[in-house]
Length: 239
Image (cartoon, rainbow, N blue to C red; front, side, top):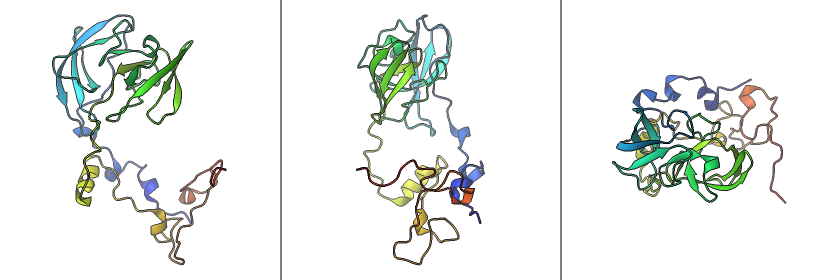
């Protein structure tokens, strides 16, 4: 019989796990997708802190009248000028297509498809690095050290995301961590499956000192059993 797992409850959209988007200041993205060859200048008029983002957001007013929230990079300050367009200089804060940037450039907020506003490298203190240009694609090394190909027309901002020291300060009390997670409606604390009872989780039981029953699960298993390594291609230590 299938079990009512927390993993399943988190996907149904109940109030417990719904993101408090009414508290968010807005969507952090690149300027609306216009002619990429046209250079548009803007100025940073303010910084705002948004509960939905780990990085401060820079409020930018462009010369064409558009107001935009973008993820702030290190060393940005109110009054700085930023430029959007492929002909812009590859310097801190400017937004260009990946194909217009030289190799070795540090970037953040990379688009997955041209014009989507940015999907990759958005956490505080992170950056990606442009490795090579290959025709209509660009190879980028992500913060995980994984190398990924992007369309050369995908846009990104140049620099390193601000608030890189966010994780340096220790969280000394469980209560502080609880309130930090509650502000974003994240599940906390997370109890391991092996510590639960057999009726609550497929890994749980109390019959042995090593309670876990973690093992690979078929991708065709019923929903109540689908936890852990689902449809694993391989398990065990690499030799």
